[in-house]
Length: 179
Image 1 (cartoon, helix red, strand yellow):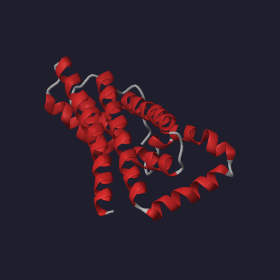
Image 2 (tube, one colour; image 1 turned 45 degrees about the vertical axis):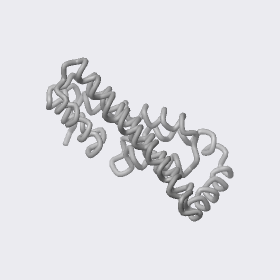
Image 3 (spheres, helix red, strand yellow; image 1 turned 45 degrees about the horizontal axis):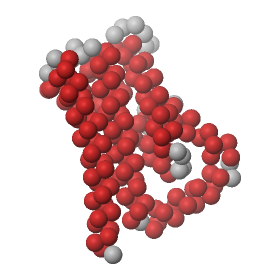
Image 4 (cartoon, rainbow, N blue to C red; image 1 turned 135 degrees about the vertical axis):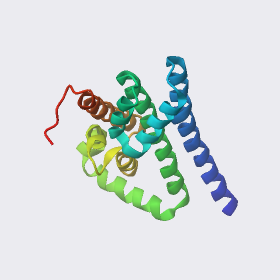
């Protein structure tokens, strides 16, 4: 039993690390290499995105990275992080009877609200823009509520791109914020 648990965690950890390595690190570095952007700048934008989420656009623009490349790198980071979070959450569900029970109870309650069960993932468009919820919590919320992962990823990404593009416009001076 213990060995099975370790193997489950190991499998999920490999999936999470693969998403992080490929989407969060490798593809942005290759993109930077192709475009002649120093690796340190790309890694700085990646790190800033992980910590600051969408607000990292100000770091990317401040480092002189083209806005389209900032958006692309930050979106690669977003997709990789979302996939890694799903893998980590799955590890908890596979290992914990308490978590599985919570998920089953949540699924029963969601099924009582057909509109939410069917179209709930659409709400994920706005969650990445919300300061407290943001990218990480929106992924966990979609996982807990058992929404379709591909649809959830698409809607989280749409919200992410929208808020990132808006903040890019702010960073570039096209939109003025009254604060």
